[in-house]
Image (tube, rainbow, N blue to C red):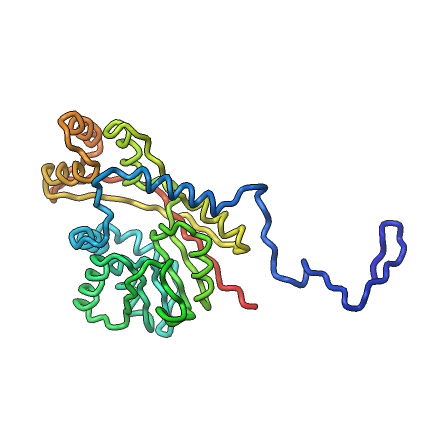
Amino acid sequence: MLCDCAGSILLLPDEYTFPVMTGPALPCNYGDIDWNEVWKAKQDRYEGARIPGDSSHDWNKKENAERYASQSEGEFEKRIRLTLAGLSVNRSTRILDIGSGPGTLAIPLAPQVQEITAVEPGEGMVSALEQRAKRAGIANIHCVPKVWEDVNPEKDIDGPYDLVIASLSLTMRDIREAVLKMDTVSCGDICLYWFVDLPFWEKMYADLSRPLHGKSYCAGPKADCLWNVLFQAGIYANIEMLPLDKEYRFPSREEMTTFFRKRFGVRTKKQEKVLDAYLGPLIQEDANGVIVSGESTFAKIWWRKRTQ
């Protein structure tokens, strides 16, 4: 029984229901903004602004994957430690690691859990992961050599998983579809890690793109956009800010110069002068060689699979 504003009794049919209260939570809207379309547009601009010939992030290449793997065992130690400290696992935990790289998280997690399915499309990364696992005597990591968008949950993986992780690997164009598929194959926590501001390496691209190549740099989508995509999909995620340190270490200035000239597409004497002037104030030296480093922030964005 209900009353109208004048106090009169309103009689409702027996079958009347109140869909907002009895149905699933309805996401709020941000006016006309579709945050998934914002993500797509930013991702497209980012891909279009790449420096021609820069293959430093081609993870099919063995040398790139081995470089990243060596950083996982040294330079990335603080990030890995912070990430692992925030995960709740035990010997019965089954993990899906999306964009696993050379086993940055999978290798240290493997001895603590039942099994890990590592989704990784880069041939070099898969090879590095398998080699690292073999050296460590780890046999409970199974690799799926595909991009997440191409993974068939019914054929390629064996869900549901107690923990789904995607750490600094959210390069999917349709991020809403990607995260909803992660939610579908989970029976526990989904933990995403993504950049909040420009990471140090991206700051370098942003600084150097115009003076070296005459065009503006376009940054990719960040954690604010990701959280809003989740919110509009009805996922009200937790968020935690974490420090992200980046350190490039080289035995000599010559090796440092060679590395950055290749990365930033430096081919002329004028470009060499620009790069040298930029790197100069950033260079530090210790007994082991040359260091170029910087700081930024990344976010842990996570939620627990909602049970119906």
